Length: 576
Image 1 (cartoon, rainbow, N blue to C red):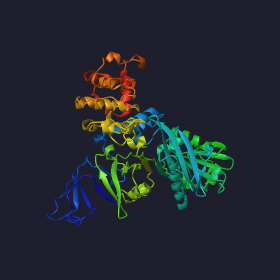
Image 2 (cartoon, rainbow, N blue to C red):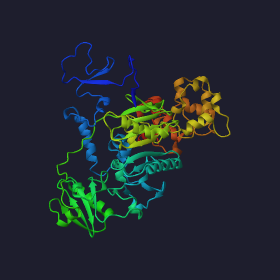
Image 3 (cartoon, rainbow, N blue to C red):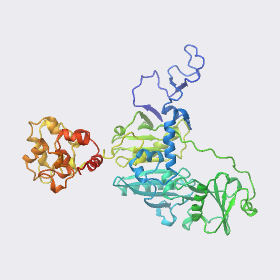
Image 4 (tube, rainbow, N blue to C red):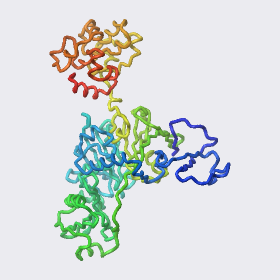
């Protein structure tokens, strides 16, 4: 993998991927003149890194990067707020309205949407009964389709879950069946590749703490290997979006003082509570035990085990008992790369200070947020089938030794989830949404000749797509514009899209050039508006000064905003 940058840099005497970083906090003695140190060639790039001002490229050379508390108080406060939110019921409205929060938590909602599950058997997908949802097997692969609503639109996430013991044929069948489902949904599925043990929080939230991974193949469907008489399950997590239960070898060495374990033997299920576990962990264990066993439950505290407990595990044995340190949240900035393939080699060019404008319809872009790898596919991109392999190659080549189990998410243009858009400073969800009113203006009304040829060169130079529109633009509006050649360019830019071909040219021209008092337009029912006023565009009939006074911006600024923001402001100010 060749890493590049989108910004120009001086040419090097010879191609090289070598790079030397030096820290200015503890300067050493100067090197002799002409000596590069370490035997590196003289053209090796040298970058000086100041303590506390390390770049994202530098930080990603380390598996874990910890920020100093004194220099990151504001970030710690932000992470503290996020951490606090994860310990209470998630507010779906906040996740929808604040994509940056959804991205940080890796949650599109609270997991209460519609769920469908398929298991790969005989290289085909078989539906799983809803009562068995969340009961997975390490030797199988699963498709989990999650459906939810956001901003009035139905959106989908397809999780491709891969067990540690799954065969290569099953993994291939998993990918091919995912492509079939995506074709059925016309490319609207966000596909997230998930490896057993590295499930993202939202995947866990779907099953509300009842995700259990069994070791036998498809045993919970009544087929496959028979279950052993003694089984040990490790429960990890303290809430519904961090809890998973995994079957582990039934021996004492598998225990850990920081967690809860379930030991299932003939006639009884022991809930073993380690000394380091808290009340939340115990509660989640009681949720998981309802999935695993219907036998009598018996609580066992560490150090107070009955002899029969150790006999079932084959006798006592040492196990981890040191207090577990809290996991540090990596404070690494996301990085965006443009992907291309040259002579069979993946080439990544980094885009610095990236924004939504850097995403093009022919592009395949890789967004590295450290905990996930997003591959954004433009609508006309031709290499989307290789995208997952590119993500895996990126992880393998990463200098920090990244985990190959890092989730890889395929996102198609126009179907971006908030967990992706939240990493961008601003995001217009309607940027790639076709505007029917614009299309009607360009193509003309049915049975009517297209008016584009009749518009003067001056009108043609304007950005018609920035005009307000809700699907009711008609040809007469453009004909009225054609008749207003004496008007200034600004007046033409402020022309409304009127709703019907029955509107006369004179009334249209009057609407463009005239203005009405605010009292006749604000908080008025449609039938009470002056004759000729489009109820959906009533704000447009204000004078420029009234518009600026009420909305706090010019008409051009207002109509350059996303449509949903326009509607929101009009509702608040009485123009809807």
